[in-house]
Length: 112
Image (cartoon, rainbow, N blue to C red):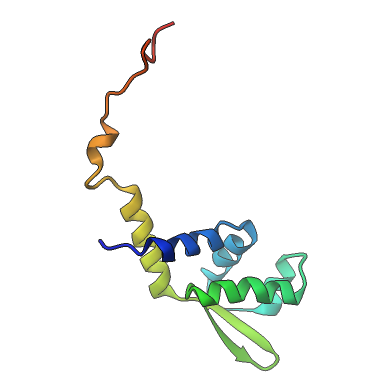
């Protein structure tokens, strides 16, 4: 699997914020109005707009305007790619031998 490490580093950085991660979790249930997201947090609308722009720019969230409010949803295709990439990074592949390394300190790990 070919990984764009720069792209995924940006995605993981944006997702590492607890508030944004909760928004992603909320959106995993379906599309939400910005007003409903705002109800969950003690933030201003401009702060939410900034967070949503970061996620939209990376492609993990889609936005559409309905009336005076924005409607947000996850881009399922992008999130599936993120999921696959995390799986690829976490599941042993070419580096599986490193997990079975019998490295020890000079004294040994179990010595007193």
